[in-house]
Image 1 (cartoon, helix red, strand yellow):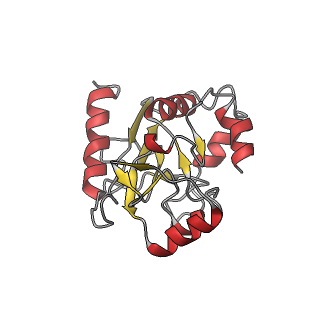
Image 2 (image 1 turned 90 degrees about the vertical axis):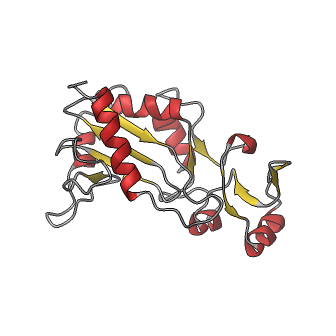
Length: 198
């Protein structure tokens, strides 16, 4: 999966700071406290961990937060992809332009289509489902996006040619913060600032 993503997505789009299992761990935000079981398995696997004054071997950092994805070696379809705001801007812009340069014209509409009438889920994305969606009230009905467990959120409105990228860290220092309203507020502000009416 990691090699396929590199070859088919990241390399054609020149997304040089996106991938699984990052090597510059200090550039990655820490998440929760590193549990004893995870530290022991990490030591057995001889995995590198940052050990700086900011992270004295205490936090999960530079390693996928999701336990199932981590047990799979950090490469999984559900979690483990690391990126930067610059690379994600390249990716969302390419999707606003209908995937030109790396997708066949018929691919993106299939990705954005709802899987069933009673679900907002599409293939790899969520779709706008009323004003309670994490996209907020202003992103249009054809909008699609995705949220991440640690607090990330991306929404794209293809009609308004607008995208919002939120990189947050709701699980640091513990897994107690909620972001449902903050995500809606953020994407509403993005639309007000960058949308077609701005």
